Image (tube, rainbow, N blue to C red; front, side, top):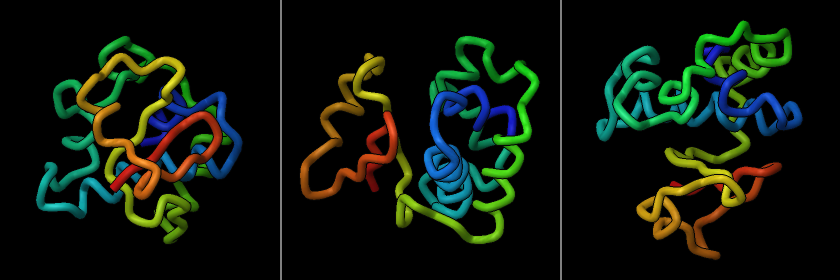
Length: 113
């Protein structure tokens, strides 16, 4: 999980990294997604870092601390299941999910339920 957080959010502050970790945990708890962290992370086209190989980068301490905080219950997204960086995202499907009523901005990412 730390590798996924590192690959997806290494440019974010601590809260932004915790938010990405929380989304992974939220998905594992949701009946809409696989029920293990590994299966959530490796679900096809779910995370850019898996698709582009950044999942293989060695995570730094910041990624581990963010994962730890999320596991201990910190969820700055309040239960969100999706996020994207609107500056770099190419998914039209994801862009359609964002609305002013549901979106929560944390760092460079927009989180949605």
